[in-house]
Image (cartoon, rainbow, N blue to C red):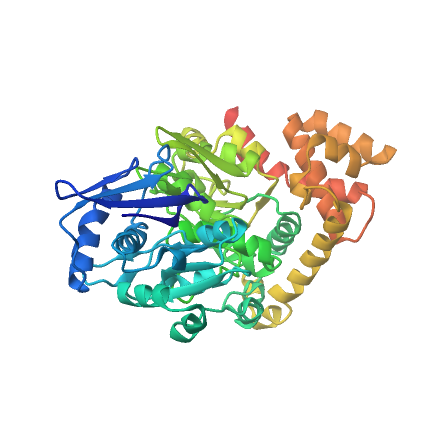
Length: 522
């Protein structure tokens, strides 16, 4: 007696079809599983045998062999319990194999037959739809997560008994027995739009220059560094950046939700991630937790910040080696991890926002309050390497807030996040129009060849930039960063051309890092 069940699994954040083949034959009684499995997958045999017994099914004293293919990919997780149990029952004749045509099965089993949630449902359901499956049988807790994908029926079951009853029912009875799960995606986005956050730029008094720099960074998806003394409002500003970013599109939402699904961070009621992620790791985070990987490969924090903000507070407190791990993800917008188990690629298209004090005590260059020695300052700021600084488009100083900025009168004229967001979205629409038909989405993504095409300068502007390049001893990367930022500033001003005033502001955002880093090299 032989049966074949189709399930799915994830490899990195991509998914693949997994064939669960079951053979029940005469011979020395045994229960063998083969197919390049991890320990937790191998343990599925014991869970399935006990679950079947507790559900009232008598397993024959036969030789049971289970093969998981493809054999060249190591099977991780606990996703095969339910398909193995269904495969055994099918081979025993309890379920007609024809009832499993174009049906994918996945889920973990408890010893009492309960079907428990598993990670990675979203990419697996997407793969099932792409390969022509009509139905996916999965844990009830994960049903909403899978139901966001159109064109495929998602059936959530809470026990093995429910799964068997559904598979044994006729086509007419199935939907009456267990209704397919449905999700109103538009309602999810509407709810996210009107679910107001407590964070708003209207709460921030003063720091007009910082708010202007953050607006530019949001409009062009530029990386930004905020330098200033303790209590200047650096973290307060950074935490509000997601409130001025454009809302996630459905495509972006699916990308982000896939990462969270694989990481097991989608709750039962969280069918989709509809808001821009904001990740703020502590400086003691491990390298694996930051970039991803591990014995069972999983996305790291920088991938969890995909399409959103990665905020590094007190940036020099991070070891230099950890910060340098960001160099490749910033450039390539993805993380490549090579292990003996294979190569894993995780997306990491995030906006880096760094905040730091200018010295260990936080008050440099105010020598009336700062007692740090030049060596201490150099060592502290040296945690942020030149290559990382070169990859940050905007560096802005957050000065100490004046008492006049904290008055109630000033507070009334603060711009709200909604107002700033409207300008950001207008600049984003200009970029969409400019880059229509290309793979570029933001000004920050322009390559040097794209910059030549989209950032043409007049004679006066070229002269100014050439002078700035020579005077400030800029690198080629910094030169291109200035042009990208200037293009964004021009978009905010609704100017089709980059003017000298736009270049002047963009160059100004390259001077703050020189103030704190270059002087310490003397």
